[in-house]
Image (cartoon, rainbow, N blue to C red; front, side, top):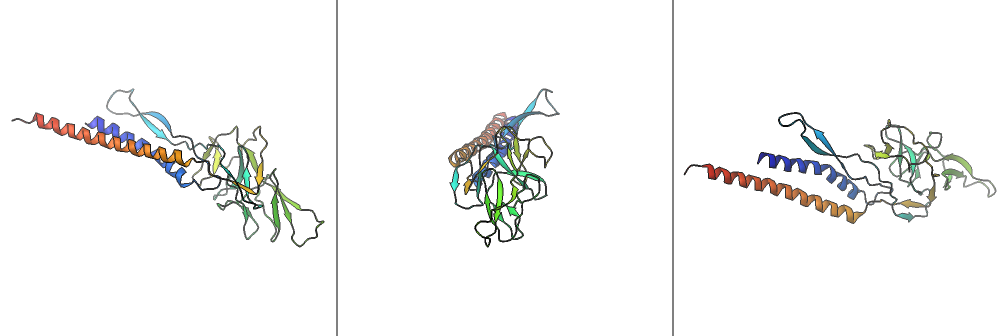
Amino acid sequence: MDRLAFNAVAAINEQRVASQMSINELANITTVGFKSSFEAAQRATSFNGAGMSTRSQPQAVSEDFINMKPGAMMSTGNKLDIALSDSTVLGVSAPNGELAFTRRGDLRLRSNGTLENGSGHAVRGQGGAVITAPPGVILTIQSDGSVYGTDPVATANVPPVLLGNLLLRDASQTKLQRRTDGLYQVVGAPAGQDITPGPTLPGLTAGALEGSNVNAMAVMVKLIEQSRSFEQQINMIKEAKTNDESGETMMKSS
């Protein structure tokens, strides 16, 4: 019974990682620009102790690599809303000040003139500095990421002023992973490292937002399968306990 129960408990514990990923994706179905992660990986880990030296235990490991599959595009008409094209990501400042990347494009101006997205992360420009705008200026964003400001009290023949260019990077050839703050960083690179430009020219669509790329039905089916697998492992432990008790009864003297 001990070995059967140990294997069942180990299976339950390893399913925990995949269940957490599924629950997180289900909770972010309506989050703007949210990207799902690839399936949890399985690694065979060797353990020292009693038994053969070749024994190993498979363990689920959450790499949290970002799946860049695009989500549904929603037209909003808001000049500060942007939907990033293809595998384009936007450079922002993480809460600790490091450079990080995101797909969330619901931009807005703080009271101090700093451009930020819906999560409160300050948007960076091509030079690495945060993009700012004078009070009262009307912003427009072009498809190449250039940000222009127009003074609402200026005459009609005054052209808009270039305030900066969004830090856009093509991540089609770069693996990204999710940070603890929900932003993206390059896999295997130190936190805050920039992305090497890819072969595709980064771009965006103004006046629109990208929805989450999570398939709600697929995630719900996955959660049901994980729940049934959990019940199956529990039933195996109960059955092993019953068999063990039956064996003890047979061993008793009459």
